[in-house]
View (cartoon, one colour):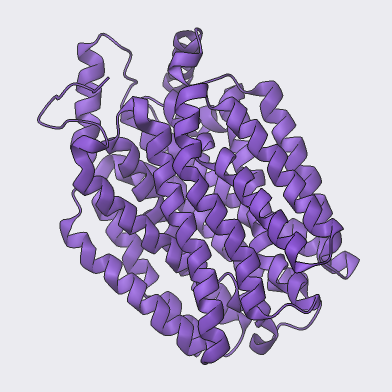
Length: 436
């Protein structure tokens, strides 16, 4: 059923197709920006002074990214509720400008770490805003689809960028390839900002509609610390969803930091590595076009649990096999698992969060989720360095992902409104907790 028009802003994807499409293009550029690092930099880390076997130092560029992106996700959500989504998105793109320049002129790996601090700012502000704006524009009945489209465009771009820069680096100087690629992408995104509209008016329209319908709308005055504590620790479903976010980013850290080195040690070329990691990201991205919508129909929990199971299977298959065909199949399985769990973790959070502090709730979730990059860099880098190889880190990640899926299966309450009769009581508990 189409949602009613209030305050001149009709919610729904079709009713806002122009702005929704523009945000989809924006998130595609966001994905290209992070994806350009995924094949070339880890594979060529020795050229930046990283000695062979120094896995912890190698992973430090993901550590800097994760710490900054995680913390600023929290800031971005609160800031967006106060000053608007568009201004935060613009700040994210401005922060992206130094990234290709730092990589191009880098005399050592510390410059790459610095570049990834700016990448963390860019991704925290820009990607947080695209997904928030997509959700703002869509109706509640399309929330999973909206998140799925956002993540599909972003991670398809991650895969394409990893593959494309792998080819460019094999024909041209890798630094020059990343410089031209990065500046072109970020410049195009900034140019398109002229046509972006802020979506806070749609948030206020949703709030007005809920009040008109007699629904609980949440307290806009809820303190950010109360919201953070509620989402992080006090509510069992929120808590389980947050840990799931952390663990899926630990798995993605494995792909980003250690898979290229692992495959390079097993004699794959840059182009072949680009294909394997690109399959993972593209299957993840494109499959989200239907996995988010699937959860709108059957509920959030079944796809999330299935996704963690497939992700663990694909990671284990990577460690257990030794040929590019098997690795490519494992990458596709991992991508499908990510597609099932990733947008639906966000959609489940958005289901429960009242509209007036949805940005802060999603910001808290994204804080924990992307801090998973930092945790993954420390844990997986330490395991690989201690074991003198990446294989034990791969097995450890598979076990961690399986346990995370089990936690969600046991602890999470279904959040999709049409699939639970206790949602009203759950919402009351959440709002009382935030107001406390």
